[in-house]
Image (tube, rainbow, N blue to C red):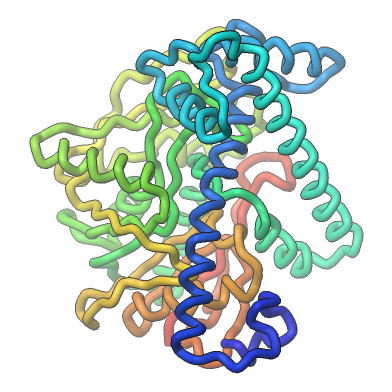
Length: 416
């Protein structure tokens, strides 16, 4: 691994003679640094909530235009007032925790203006980072190299906070990949699967909806697709959630505990009204979850939100198929006997937060958790590494909407 990345190792690993002990010390330190990035990811999500949320303000959602600055200021003011009394709003409670961690108690005397300053400073930081990311992608596009653009996108967020936000989009690309792998004979049956970093629907950067409870989509979407494609039996598959966020793990564990007492899990799946979706995407959205649950009446979007809604109640027996393990895939893996290794691992919008060296370490750990012939699905271009028995076996490209940038390429990495 070190030899493969000799030209791009972290500074503290360059030109040193490593022992097992010093390597473990570096991994331990790096694990702590990676986990610390969750706080910056929370800050990014809070920025999205300020721009798009409707639970704390009557101001219009920020969509650009000449009035954007004035609307942002008004929404920041409303957020500063709302966090004084968050009540049962779980998103606002997270904002309160984040503010307190940054030294500002929103319930304190005369805290309003100080909270506004913190929120505006966060907004300026995120907007600056977004401009830098956009410039990087624009430069890559100018070169006219589609493969190079995919590689650039695949580690774009290597220095960004780890965000938990999610949407239904990548799950459609995963289902298309599963269908194509089945047709090609790459994948025949999935008894055990894992999802790395499935996310928690807090305030997605595209939509920012906050009128329904926080939820996780990908584990249920994966089971739904595997059953729909007859790649799993009616009683399976078991799906392990691998994440380093206590918020995600606690959410899943609570859902499983309730399911064992007979409680279902209801998903609210929005379809943005201002996006020119392609018909296959709409068809996927309409059928989302119906192999593992029952369609129910969806929540109605509030004023100012142009979205169609689909809701499905997932059966308790399906929810009980989930497990949850604390794991940093860059520095850790589950030690599994051969018969318990995974047939399939899914990691979408996760490995983009790491550079090639850390992606290589993640591939090593993923290989140790997959059975021989097992498959990793990722919407990132990952490096070929000597000594790591993972190689690309194909890929699927899926467009979600008429916007040429609204799509995904999912690569099938197979363990030899």
